[in-house]
Every structure is written in C-alpha cells, then in structure tokens.
Amino acid sequence: MNPSEETVRAVLAQHKGWFKIAGIILLILGFFSVLLPLVATLVYETMFGVMFLIGGIVLLLQSFQCRSWRGFLLEMLGGVLYAGVGLFLLLYPLAGVLTLTAILAAFFLVQGAFRIVLALQIRSVKNWGWMWVSGLATVLLGVVIYGSLPASAGWAIGLLVGIDFIFAGCALVAIGSAAGDEPEEKAA
Image (tube, rainbow, N blue to C red; front, side, top):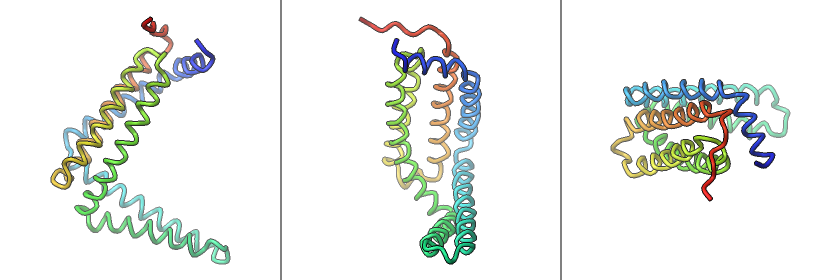
C-alpha cells in the first residue's frame, strides 16, 4: 500500500461518522424529492431565484460602496445580472424550470464523471464500487434529462435530483461503513 492509500484510509477512518451522517441526510432529501417531484422542482427553482436575487442585491450594494474603485462598473453589472436572473426565475418559474433542467443535465454529466474518477482513485477502499455506480447513474441521469426535454421539465429536476441524492447517500453510507476495514484483495 502506498502512502496516498494509507492517507485515504486514515482520513476515512477518522471521519467515517460524518460520511454516514452526510449519506443519511442525502437519502432523506432524496426520498422526499422522489416522492414529491413537482413540489421539489418548484422549491429548487424558487431557491435558486431567491439566492440569485439576494446575491445581486449584495453585489449592487457592495459596488456602490466602492464607486471610486476601478472595477465599479463591472461589479455593478454583475450585480444587475445576478438580480436579473433571480427575478426571471421568480417571475417566470416555468421558463426558469426549463432553463434549470437543461443546466441540471450538464451538471449531472460533469458530476457523474467526477464521481467515476474519484471512485477509480479510491479503488483500494472497500465498497469503492458504490461511488463508481453513483457516478455512472449520475451520468445516465444527465442523458435522460436531455432526452426528455421539454416535456418532463416540470418533474424532472425534483425526481432526478432526488435519485442522485439517493445514489450519493448510499455511496457515502457504504464508504463510511467500510472505513477502517481491511482493503479488498486485488485480483491477480
């Protein structure tokens, strides 16, 4: 076992409780999203709208505090962009849902790839395959979203984020449960 594998094992063993807690929280959120996908979709869309609007207001206030700063105009325009996107999401939730659904598809494709790479990096850890399966499932969710637009945009975000949370939660619980165990034997 090389030093980096020992480090991974030590960190996992030290924080295995947090892996399990994070996994359980993701599982709970995932089940609620799957059971109520339309509600979850509208909640996520509204949360994004509120966050962008607040972020825009904060950036605008900050930019006006530093009017003499050379970056004033760009910072102010950034604040207007944030606030504008937030207002758009809040005033036109259906259009916002469609836009967010397309963005979510891209997110799932990239996030899934990251999980697959992570799984391959921790192959010496027992149950690493769960992370690989989680990554593959996330990539497939991204493909499903693109293939179903625009008809399923109303429920897709809630359902697919829920499914992703469930897979990620299972992976974290499995890895946390195996932390501190002996490594899997590699096939010769």
